[in-house]
Amino acid sequence: MYYRLGDIRFNLANRNDKMGEMIFAAWHSLSNTGVASDTAAMLEFLGDDAAASDGPLGCVGYCMSGAFVVTVAGTFPDRFAANASLYGVWIVTEHDDSPHLLADKIEGEMYLAFAEHDQWVPGNVIPDLTTALDAHGVVHEIETYPGTEHGYAFPEREMYNEAAAEATWAKIFALYERQLG
Image (tube, rainbow, N blue to C red):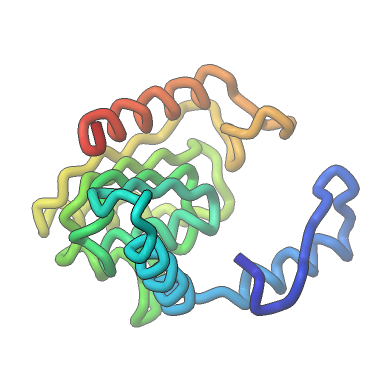
């Protein structure tokens, strides 16, 4: 995702304050427009590959990629049929490019899982996102897993919640089965 910045790799096992600053700087260098542009290039590349299907696609994003999942679902509605976000951030913002503003274009099914305790997801996000998706008839499920924190689906992290992670993945696999076969 950070190719525009060069060859960046973060060894999170050795994370410290300085690495945290670098991670956030890299994250903030991304934009919904840039991700949509990159996705268009990937779709074009796949379109030129005889071995690639031209059928519907699925998309999964964690944390910052939640915004990108919603952006891609709304930007390429004819391609993305199964879209999932795990504790996604910046899905609802005050900016003109807020992903939830693309709800009127989304045709694929959406699954959005949130942590009960998440400093990165303000209290307005779930109600505002629900309102936007409902208003445009987007098939979706939004759920919050009790007792979880942001990052609950990563076994390597101390906030890992196996029950919630397994339930989330079961929902995603069912979504993919329904929409992608």
